[in-house]
Amino acid sequence: MFYTVQGEGRLAGVPSVFVRTSGCNLRCSWCDSAYTSWDPEGETETVEEVVERADGYGANHYVVTGGEPLLQPDIDELCASLDGDVTVETNATVYRDVDAELVSMSPKLSNSTPDEEADGWREIHEEERIDFDVIESYISSHDYQLKFVVADREDIDEIEDILASLSTYDRNHVLLMPEGVDRDTLRQRGEWLAELCKERGFRYSPRLQIHIYGNKRGT
Image (tube, rainbow, N blue to C red):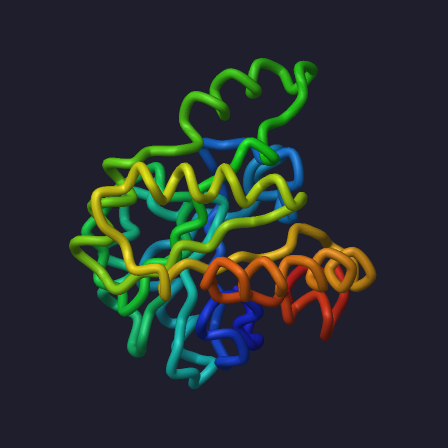
């Protein structure tokens, strides 16, 4: 748990308490929080303990993230108990009718699939990384954003294919974010990605936490 400014998505810059759960059903090759997926760690706490610590920061916004937070059995109770606006960040493979002002979905593109030596995770990840039923369930039930991590210009075609497979969505709710964990990479990719956003009518998402703090845990 940590207090910082939201670095990504349409609420970028909003002071927020991050509650990061450990455990994930995917294994992204470029995961920037491997301590919640590839090598999960952390301590078990009750919902009451988490809420008491989170409320102690005196913030008005909370971000429940992971890993994949919607795998946690008590996540519904946690979201409903936090005293403020809640954003839930999810890979959009699990549906839960959580009490959240914003569901930030980040469906994983093929650029996230690990290599053949990833202890069997390649097949699992590739099979589970996109779930159209889950995505559409959130679109119909919550305020949402669709945030895609883009590593290469060719990723835009895959994004358009995913969107074309949805029965409904608002293009104004689609954000493209450059992949990278250092300022130089984000700047280089951001230059051409911003142009793609202008051409296609998408929103651009920064990674403010990298630009401000670098690739530092707890920011």
